[in-house]
Each structure stands twice: as C-alpha cells, then as structure tokens.
Image (tube, rainbow, N blue to C red; front, side, top):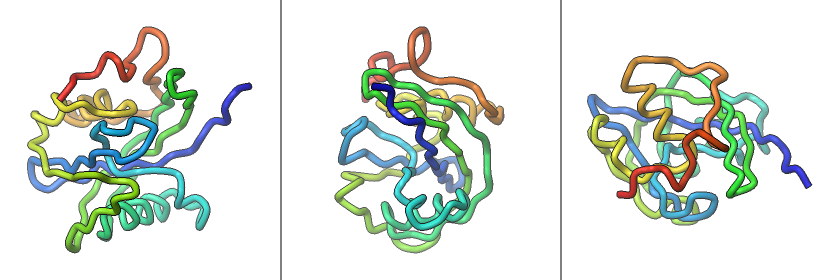
Length: 155
C-alpha cells in the first residue's frame, strides 16, 4: 500500500560559520545527524513558518527566527517515506535543552566539516547546496540513482 506524501519542515540553524546538527533519537534515521525538523507542529497550525518554530522549540527548547530557503521532494523507499520538505534558514535564541525523545545529542559543526557527518534524510545534499549558495526549488533526493542512506558518509 502506498504511503502518504508528508509535508515536513526543517531548520538550517547557523551561527557564524557553524551549523547546528542534532543526532536523531528515533526512526527514521535513528543515530544519524540531521537538521531540526518534523511534522508534529502541523497538528497545531497549518502555517509552515509557525510549524518550524514549534519543531525547534520542541526539540531544543529554543526560539527560532528564520526565513524560507527552499523545498525539495525526498523519497526513501527503505523507510517507505516520501515527503516534500520545506527548508528554513535562521538562528536560535535561548539555552539549548534537548528533548531526549527526539534528540540524543546536538553540536555546532563548522559548515565545511558537516558534510562529512553521517547525515539522515537528504540533508547531505541540502548542506552541499547551502554551502554553494544555491537555493533549492523542487529538486528530488533519494530513491534509485540518488542519495540514499547507504551512500552517505559514515561519521
């Protein structure tokens, strides 16, 4: 049975030349590093700008301030997961208090080094696009012939 297409938000949180990555505490991509994001905030509001704030608050206990950066279709058959991800770029304020239900660890990583981490979802390619200054609109990640979990760097 086909899985429904999910609408997801993700926050590319930067501070100077560093990006904040979280290590996921649950599936999909448990144990992988990723941007903060998710779908749960859509239960409270249909506004993606508010949802990304709720996701950052829920995972890190911080306020997020950012702007829409781009979107991408992501498909990972090994997880039976298809989604359209809305990416926002911004910063956080407040002390980080991770929610262990979703996050096992978080780190500020120099941007060029972050591409060498074991990143979940399509975040490896997203980070490469972000570093190159290229915004993303409607491209595809995952599935046959594209980035999959098995082809990502292992750190």
